Amino acid sequence: MKLKEPAAELSKHWEVMQDLEDAFGQIASMEFLVEQLHKAVEEDNTTAIIDTTDALTSFLPVYTANWDDKFGKAWKQVVEDDTSACEPLACADHLADD
Image (tube, rainbow, N blue to C red; front, side, top):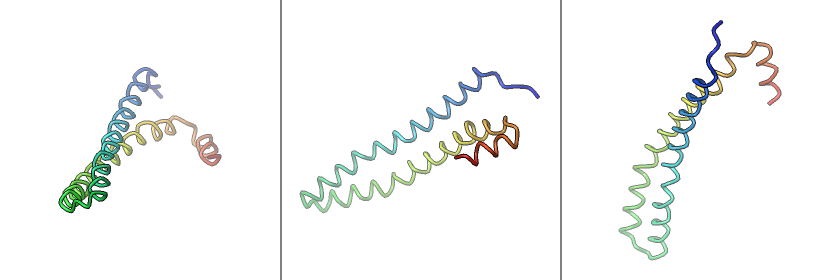
């Protein structure tokens, strides 16, 4: 069995985790639209409420789908790769402790 080089593995882990953080940052940027919606409601600005709600409804699924994709890749790269290097019984015992 050939072992992976730690530096290369760390680099791959860092890359997928950075992608995941970037994807979350995009979702967090939706805070601006939520603040705008709150302001529009307080001002009873129906046009702004409709426009902001439409923007949230359109963009949020795209951002969350991107995050789900990045999370899946990070999970596969970091967690599944890590457990595949374990002895089967040792991994099962470790996972059972969680």
